[in-house]
Length: 155
Image (cartoon, rainbow, N blue to C red):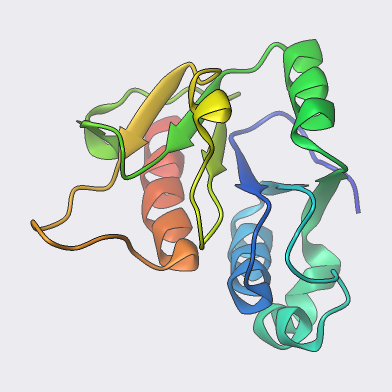
């Protein structure tokens, strides 16, 4: 599985939950989006829960694995692509941002989000607005909401 032509990519920073990643891979396969997994993940990519959530769509998924954030960042910079981080620590809503066709949209770990050093490398930090007191949304749901807006904007 390799990445397809230049379009907005999904990047998952050290995902923890195989079911979420499987759901995201299925979603991305259906929309023709690339997924980058930045390791280490909290599970093996042959995990039965990942396969169950991804169903037979995993074969259609365009997936790249990066052994570390350093490896991912070296690849991203070599491709000259913007890094857009989704985080609960941002103030700007994703719906007010102008996405580009070569953006990489980075989502943090389910258990811990993104570390500060990764935040500091982002070209933009965005959030999904929620009511006061709500901490976060499910990762797969967050990816689908944001990438739906990205696809709407860039086609």
